[in-house]
Image (tube, rainbow, N blue to C red):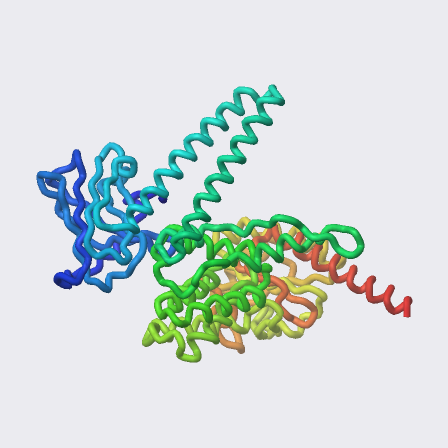
Amino acid sequence: MARFSLTLILFLFQLVIFAGKDGYQIKFKIHGLKDTTCLVANYYGSGTYVTDTLEVNGKGEAIFSAPSDQPRGVYILVISDKIYFDFVLNNDLKFTMETDMKDPVGAMKITGSLDNEEFYDYMRYNQEKFKHIQELQQQLKEVEKNEDSVVVLNKKIVELNDEIIEYKLKIARERPFSFLAMLINAMKEPVIKEIPTLPNGRKDSTYAYRFYKDHFWDDMVIADNRLIRTPVFHNKLKKYVDQVVAQNPDSIFKEAGILIEKARSDPEMFKYLVWFFTYHYENSEIMGFDKVFVDIVDRYYVTGEATWVSGKVLENILKKTNRIRPLLLGSQAPNMIMMDTTEQLVSLYNIKAFITILLFWDPDCGHCEKEIPHLKELYDKDHEKYELEIFAVCSDTSMAKMKQHMIKKKMTWVNVNGPRTLTGDYHELYDIQTTPVIYILDWEKRILAKRLQSDQVEKFIDNYVKNRLDRLDKLDRLDLGN
C-alpha cells in the first residue's frame, strides 16, 4: 500500500517472545528466495519500525511468531529495500502467505486469514483499476485536440472512479466490522453532494467547508489503536489539524481535546494522540502555534494524565513549557535592564516607541552579518515613519568588540550588552539558543511576532500598521454613524 525503503526505517527492535499455541504464527513461502534473512516491520504513525528478523530456509520458507497480544495493524515483510509486501495482523492467529519475488502482490496466495484475503483482493482490484485509469489518461494526452474524444475519455475516467468508490463503500457496508472496512473508513473523504441556497437566493459559501469538517471523521472509531499501525491514520490526522481546522491556536487546541477525549477508552490511542499534539506543536514552524504545545502540556502533563511520562523527561517538558509560556504571542515581553556602550543601564520598558524590534546578535555570528544590514535599511527608512526603535542585545562579553561591530555596521539604534544585566540571563528569559533572533513588540511591549527573518520584518510591520489603521478608521466611521 505504501512506498517502503530500508533507509527510512527507524530500527526500533523489540524482543518478541512466542506465547505458545495461543500466539500468532504466520508462515511465509517466497518463490525465488532462499537461505537469507528478512525483516518484519510495522507501520506506526508516520514511520515504520522493525519488529523482528526472520531466517529464510533453502525452500524460501520463514515463520513469524509473536504473542497473542502483539499489537494489531498492518505489518510489512521486507525482503529488500525494493521488494516487500504488507500483511494484516488482526483476528487470525495462524495463516500462510505464499508468493513470488517477481510479483509479491499479484502472485499472493493466502490460507487461513479472511482479513488478508480481503486485503489482497482490495489491493489487486485497485491496481487493476488504477492501471486502466492511467491508460485512459495517456489516451487523453494523445487526443487532447479532439474535443469529442476528450469528453468520452473523461466520462470513462469518472465512471471508473465512481466504480472504485462504490466498491469500497460496498465492503464497508457488507463487512462493517472487518479490518478492511476500518481502513476504508479511515481513507474516506466527505462527499458534498449539493450546496444549499440561502433565503437571499445565493448559495451558502461556507457550507462546503462546514460539511467537510463536520463529517471528516464519519464512520471512524477513534478509540481503536489498530489505526496507529496503518499507513493512513497519521496523514489523515495531520491533514485535519493542518488544513481543515481553523488555523489559530485556540481552535486547534479545542479540536485536539475533542479527539483525545474520543480516544480515552483506548489507552494506546489516547497516548498516541497526546504525543502527536505535543510533538507536532512543540516543533511547529508556524509562529504562535507553540501556544497549542503549552495548552496540551497544561491539560495532560501538569495534571498527571500523561502517566507514561515521568522523571527527567517530564521535568524537561515542564521546564520548556514554563520557558515558552511568558513568550507566547500577546504576552508582555520580559523586561531587560542592561548596560549600553556608555556603561549606563537601559531598560527595555523605558524605550518609547510605537514598535520595538528586539534583536539578539553576536559579533562572530555569520548569519547576523547578513541579517543586520537588512534591519539597518529598514531602520533608516521607517524609524520616524512608524516610531520604530531597535533594542539590540549583544551576546559577547567584550564591550570593545561590541563597539567595533556597531561602528562597522552603523548600528545607530539602542545597543546593550547581554552579559551586563540586572534582570537575569536573557537566554532563559527569551529562549535564545542561537543568534540572530528577532522579536517585534508593540508600544506596551506585548509580543506581536517572534523569530522572524530580517526580510520578513518590514512586511509584518507594514501589515500590522495597515490593519491597525483600518480598524481605527472603521471605529471612527461607526462613531460618526452613531
